[in-house]
Amino acid sequence: MSRTFLGMPGIPHGTGNLGGEEPFPRSAARHLADHQMRANLANATGTIRAKRASVVSELPDWEELRESGRAVKEATMARLDEHLVELERRVTERGGTVHWARDAAEANRIVTDLVRATGAEEVVKVKSMATQEIGLNEALEEAGVTAWETDLAELIVQLGDDRPSHILVPAIHRNRTEIRRIFLETMPGVDPDLTDDPRQLAMAARAYLRERFLRAKVAISGANFAVAETGTLAVVESEGNGRMCLTLPDTLITVMGIEKTVPTWRDLEVFLQTLPRSSTGERMNPYTSTWTGVTPGDGPGEFHLVLLDNGRTAALADPTGRQALHCIRCSACLNVCPVYERTGGHAYGSVYPGPIGAVLSPQLTGVEANPSLPYASTLCGACYEVCPVAIDIPSILVDLRGRQVESDRRPSAERIAFGAVARVMSPPRLWRSAQRLTRLGRLLARGRATLPAALPPPLSKWTRTRDLPTPPSETFTRRWARDHGDRT
Picture 1 (cartoon, one colour):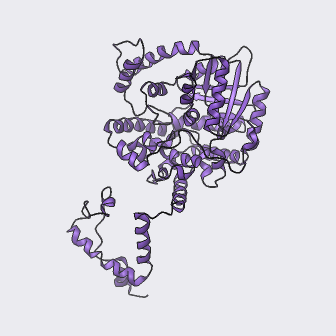
Picture 2 (picture 1 turned 60 degrees about the vertical axis):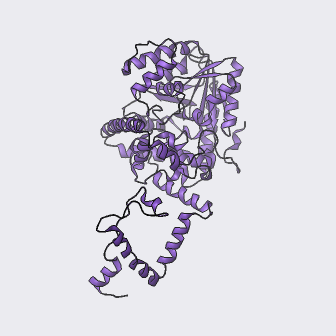
Picture 3 (picture 1 turned 45 degrees about the vertical axis):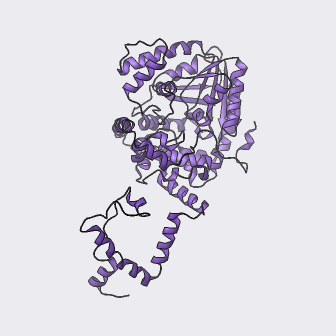
C-alpha cells in the first residue's frame, strides 16, 4: 500500500463501526427507559468529573497548556503528510514495518494476514479505539483467530457479549453486581463464592488473563501518540495489561489513526500533562509505555505499524470539521454531557459516543451516513469548556447540522412549518395579525404559565417533550409603542 493516497481526490469516507442504522432519537428514547444504566452512568461520570476538576485546579497554567495542545494539533494537521513520511522513515530505520490502510477493510486484511503469517490462532489486545472502529475482532474471528481483550473494562464487555459505551471506561454502564454475574457465567474456573468487591473482581480477571499473556505469540495494540522525529509509539494506561502485551509476545502489531502523530517529544510533553488529568483524573498515568522499532533481546522481535486513514483524509479537507481530528480520546466531553449521561453510549450507534462522537463519526463517514448524530446535543458548550485541546464541538455540530439540512431537500413537517413561519414573519402587517392570534393561546392556558402538554397533532410532537410558554398578554411591539410612542 502506497503512502501517496494521502491528500488524493476521491478518498472514500470511513467504514466499520462508525454508525448505526437506527437514528439517534429513536435509539436514545429506548435507552432512556433503562433506569439502571442511567443510575450507573450518573454515578460514574459524577465521580470522574469531580476527580478531573480537582487535579486540573492544581495547575495554574492549565489554560496555557490547553492552548498549547490546540496549537500543536493545528500545526501538525497542517503538515500531516510530511510528519507521516518522517514517522515511516524512522520506524523503518529501527527495524519496524509500516503499512498504509485506506479503510477498515484494508486495515483488517493487513492485520489478519500478518497474524496468519505467524501461525498464531489467538492474540492478546491492548485497549484500542482504532481496532474497535474497524471491527478488527470480528474480522479476526472470521479468519479463525481469537482476540482476547486484556483491559478490564473491555474484558467485561467482551465476556458479556456487549458493546463499549464509553471511550475511556467501556463498561461504565455496568455496576459491580452485574460484573460479578458476568464473571460467574463466563469465566471458566472462577471461584463460585466470588463477591462484587472491586479487588476480588480485579483479581479474578487477573488470574483469567495471566495464562493468556504468557502463551500469546502475537499482540495487537493501538497508540495514543506517535513521535515522528524518532518513530516512537506511546501507550498510556492504568492497569499494566498494556505493558504485558507490549513486551511479552514475539510479534506486535499496532493499528493507529494517522491523526495520532505528533512532530517531536516536546509536543508529546504537553499531552502527557493534559491527557491523564482530563481522562482518569490522575496527575500521571500509572503506566506510560514507549517503544521505538525493534530492539534485539528486548520485547517483541517483530513490529508492524498500520497507519489508518478510514475517512481521516476527508475530514482533514474540511476547514471546520478538521478540529475533530485534534481529539486525544480523553473522554472528558462525555463525562460532562447531559445527553450522554442520560442516554448512554450505545444510543449513538458508533464506536465513538458522546459529543466527540457526534462530530467525529459524521466527519469520518460523511454526514449523510450519520444525519442524526449532529443533533445529539443541547449545544450547552460544556464539552468545549473541558476539552484539553479546545475543540469547539458546538460550532462543528452547528456546521454539520447546516450541511445535513442543505443536503436533504425532501419535504418534511419541520421544513414546511418553518417555511410558513418565514412567510408570516416577513410582511409586518401579516406578522402583527398573527401576533393577535396568540390570544387564543392565553385562552387555552387558562391562567397557567405553560400551555397544556397534550396539544393536538401536529403540535403534540413539540409539547410531548417540551413546555410551551403561555403567550404574553402584550406583544413587544405594542409595549414599545405604548412606552416610547409609535415612531415607525
